[in-house]
Image 1 (spheres, rainbow, N blue to C red):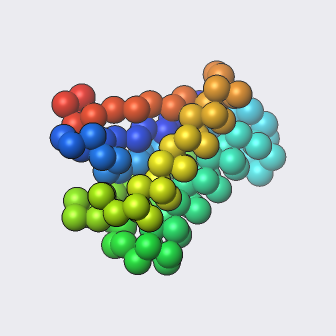
Image 2: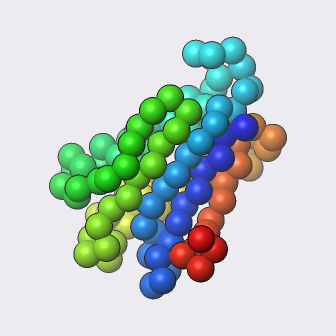
Image 3: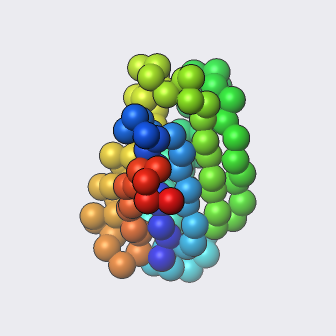
Length: 111
């Protein structure tokens, strides 16, 4: 199962995304749920770095992605639109692919 965690800071602003695992819905390279999650998170990363010009920290590896963006960018409309859209899309994919994709919303207090 692939799990995607969208974390909010103490002011309830999206602050990071962590994804781990593989959906296991199909053979490697043919897993539609895994590919959809990966494509959305990669698009969010590119949107933040290349469109919004935000410095993203973290890593991207097979089955593991972590991205964080600076606190001083979290109130920007463009940053919010990029990450909130990714979150909504991942949430919908998780609803449509129960047992393969898990969406988690968490706040700093849950650390």
